[in-house]
Amino acid sequence: MPVGPAIVSIFFFSCIVVIWGGMILARHKERMTMIEKGLKAEDIKGLYERDLRRYNPRRALMWGIVFTAVGLAALVGIALTNWYHLEEGAVIGLMALFGGLGLILFYMIAGKKGDQ
Image (cartoon, rainbow, N blue to C red; front, side, top):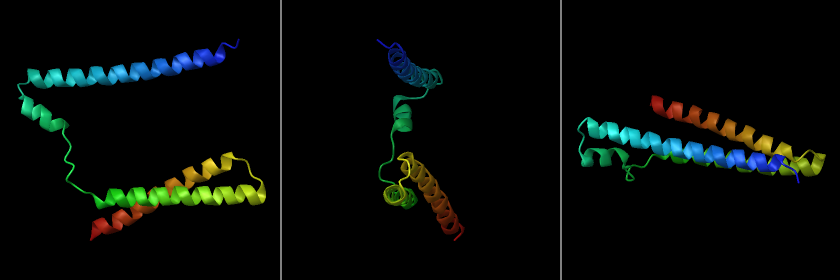
């Protein structure tokens, strides 16, 4: 029976537990500090609530460009794999490349709109 996969699985889940526990501990310490400084419960509650009424069209534009670029990369990668018999990993690489190019395109567009 191979021991390697068992060790990797134990290590993986241990890392998840440590990260999750650290996040809970950090949140607890932050709240205790707020209480020590005399903030009221309403003030603390207000810090953690998100304003869902605010709509940011730039965020929608960013995700639209990124998902379109990743979808286009998947189509191009599958076509190249079928035509030129490339490795399957080429599709994943193209998706990462096109996603990054989509983000660059978004920041160029957002920068031009921010100047107006």
